[in-house]
Image (cartoon, rainbow, N blue to C red):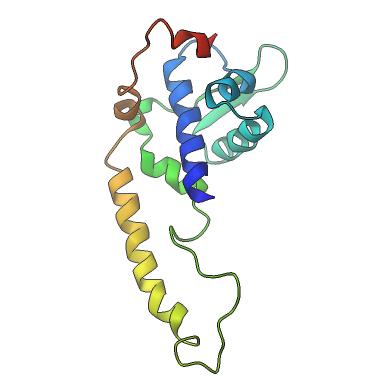
Length: 146
């Protein structure tokens, strides 16, 4: 879940970074993502709650970036979707009578925390501006944006 949400949130913000004029509708963003606009609106709500975008409701409304692209990092985006750790524990509780089962979470937690920090540190090196510069607007790609 975290993996796909990060990709969706990054895609949304990259579209907003490329469309600088006016408000961008969730329908247009959904078209670029090729997913249902309801899923886009759910992620937009999360990005708004985390102060990365601003929204305007109603006719002529939509979303736009709340900050300059140079002030948003991929680490910031990751923090908006991170629910717990990059890796997850099994949903079922391990057997408490088993010496492995009753210690597994305690032993894995520091490893998970180190992985989380390493992922964040790597993502934090790249701004949305730098990431967005990887995309070039060619004739054919404008079809998605119109």
